[in-house]
Length: 335
Image (cartoon, rainbow, N blue to C red):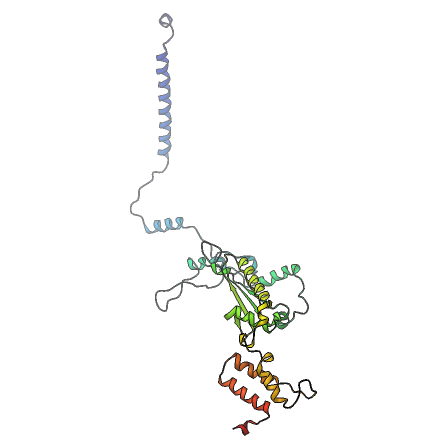
């Protein structure tokens, strides 16, 4: 005590050495305790040559138990609308059908099944549109529908009231863009008889449309595909139809001065053939008398077809028959 009192308090470096010594001693104690705990556990042996039982146990532990597909547990009277309520990608475990799709390289080989089949997942499916589901959806939509208008019960009545038909197409495909280039095409069809055109307007319209008119079905077809959108092509088709109608009914001032040689078609009512036929029928009679005879319509039709359609065997035969009938001569006497 006298020595320590004489020397005074310990220097700072001596205190640091003592603290470090305590810390090292505590670390050694912890390491000794950890080694004792490891030694108490079972020692793991490295087995380089595994037995068959060990391999099976290892495989069983790696692969968990997978439940069977849902399709094998489905009842036959289940509600398919609840299983597949809307459009979705193909799920093989939810479809109780043996669906197959894919290309086979060998002959007499079955197509790949539905499991792990990428071809079935590429295309959109419509498995949700079954007859019961469609019926249920129609029943739900009835509250938003109106009654069918009276007077349109048959196809003929609908064509008489709505002679214009618009045909468009929608495509469901897998492309980078959702708009198919072919979906912009619009086809407008109209029966020419529903326009109620006179002879001049009909002839002018037929000359303007060219091959777009089918005389067998009396249908005028206009196809538009120049605009990028379907609505634009439809508006353009209606504009063309309106312009054709008004242009056909327009009579230019110079058309009134045309002579018979300038006409685009042969018109029997204003032709010299009608005057000659009436003069032959009414020999030694004056026009306006009570016994004045008119030219039969069959003769007028035969002459018009001969001039407008050209000379062929059918038109020449009809013209011969109507001429003999007009003169009152039998065909056997003419031979």
